[in-house]
Amino acid sequence: MADVGFIGTGIMGRPMAGHLQAAGHRMFLGRHRSAPPPELLEKGAVECATWAEVARRSEVVIVMVPDTPDVEAVLFAPGGVAEGLSAGKIVVDMSSISPTATRDFARRINDLGAPYLDAPVSGGEVGAKSASLTIMVGGPVSAFECVRPLFEVMGKNITHIGTANGDGQTCKVANQIVVALTIEAVAEALVFASKAGADPGKVREALLGGFAASRILDVHGKRMIERAFQPGFRIELHQKDLNLALQSARDLGVALPNTATCQELFNACRARGGGAWDHSALVRAIEVLSDYEVGAGRA
Amino acid sequence: MADVGFIGTGIMGRPMAGHLQAAGHRMFLGRHRSAPPPELLEKGAVECATWAEVARRSEVVIVMVPDTPDVEAVLFAPGGVAEGLSAGKIVVDMSSISPTATRDFARRINDLGAPYLDAPVSGGEVGAKSASLTIMVGGPVSAFECVRPLFEVMGKNITHIGTANGDGQTCKVANQIVVALTIEAVAEALVFASKAGADPGKVREALLGGFAASRILDVHGKRMIERAFQPGFRIELHQKDLNLALQSARDLGVALPNTATCQELFNACRARGGGAWDHSALVRAIEVLSDYEVGAGRA
Image 1: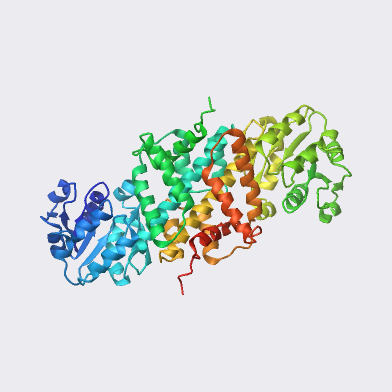
Image 2 (image 1 turned 120 degrees about the vertical axis):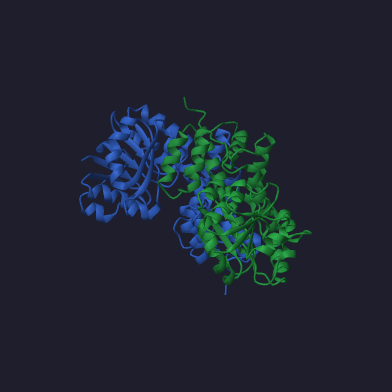
């Protein structure tokens, strides 16, 4: 069992830290926006006054905060993790942030003698609560092997993408590209079929039996037909991820034409107050453009 | 057992007609481009001099030809199917053609007392040979039930999409939209990840374990990484299908932004001589735009 620091116990971090505590690890919690959860403190977790103290008292420091600037602050602001690090401690950033910024953060942490892993997750709140997150990891093999038992407490599909820091974040961005563009593909197909007079439910069923089959056609196709747009995964969060994709693509010199279009279609949803809709509501942008709602032709 | 007419015994039609004959149906073959296959004639299939004769001698007339104008000619040209029809015979168009033209063809056939089914397939040559085609059917329930035993000889996932003619073709178009756009999604993600320095094979593996999973990520993601672009399904054929999508969308008033982009990216492949590449080679267009080949970073 390890002494584990955990900074960021919000919607995702709270159940993740809970699983680690339940597995027997001694938890040192740092405050980021939300206060450490009472149920963890009651069971012996220690609240630290600063992020530096979290780092001083832990062997592994896990960070789970919303965005790139949050990670930078937690690591390098006065009283941040960097001030409490010493050789051999491992920093694990499980937030979803910029791959290029990650490489910079890792270098600065490595300069203090500490290995760094970027280990973003997918699976959302449901996956965090059920300990079935997909975890995509970049960083040195030795650090990965050391932290793997902790990952296994929080997730199920754990892949070491590569030894370079940023590889985990790159994989997460790739994941969010595929998810957004597949949602958009299903949206175009269902609006088309629906306005052409076909039953979108039958079309979804037929397509699931063939080469067009995907988890997104299954789950989000159903949401589009049943108009079930409560999140799930909010459009504003997916926009953050596509922003990382488009920004990194500009840095790298990569052209992502349909990712750019998807971001604009998400913008169109937000223009109608849809920032907190589930990302499957991307279909509403295609519906507005086509002046027709999926399933509108049915009795 | 029925007397079955079959017009169009090319790459797809030849094995399909073969399965029907093997199941015990008496086959009447009409010539379209390719001559009737000798192995069917040897086993008792009858070659008819005209398409009208095929219709006169059969209870069910199946048409399997390349495009909308081919179907129109087979049905309505002098000596065409329409001339040989009488009340109660069923016309089944298994070609992939325009949903709107289909409604017109069906109306003209119905005027002769014959029900019409549009029943396009997916699964390609492999599916035709192994009798595992996905078949998407539009038209009256009674005709569908009557022809279903023939469909079951040729395919596996047989869905009656709706009672209106054109519904089957609409579903096929929706299928081709989802397939093209999902290929494009995987292409953007793998070029991005690759140029960012991650191993595209590891990224594909991680994504297959999560919400981004699809048959296309599995099969075509592998093709992109292994540079296996022999068809499979040729870009020029997928362009025909996206043309149907975009043309029908114009008629219907539906906006398909990413379908339009995919068609242009296929054009870019053709500009480089890629009309006969497998459609997964769409990735090459993103690679040209990004000046980087998937997997180029690996030793």
